[in-house]
Amino acid sequence: MPRFALFVIVFGLTLYALVDCVQTPTPRHLSKGIWLVVITLLPVLGPILWLLYGRVTGGGWGRWDDSPSGPDDDPSFMRDLYKTR
Image (cartoon, rainbow, N blue to C red; front, side):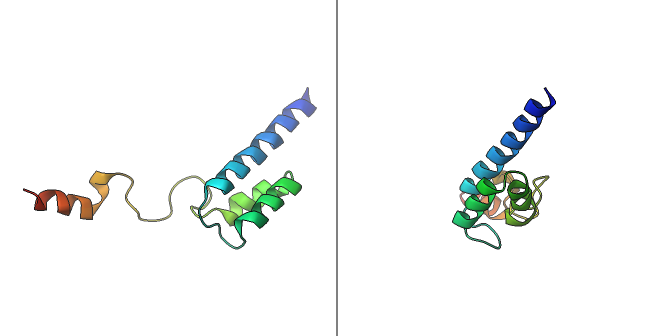
């Protein structure tokens, strides 16, 4: 049973990293194709490297950029909204 649980964890981590890499427009440090090969060929180390060094938004616990999360948080949207009145 512990082997199966370990397999499920490694498979889930690899699948998450692959999907995240495919959805990322421009990864950091390497091209997307190289990241996909690294994640696929290095089952544990590849996804960990992707999460630490490849993601644009950081470690996955929140956004590191200052872009608005919704239209009401965007100052340009609010400015344009009040211009129409």
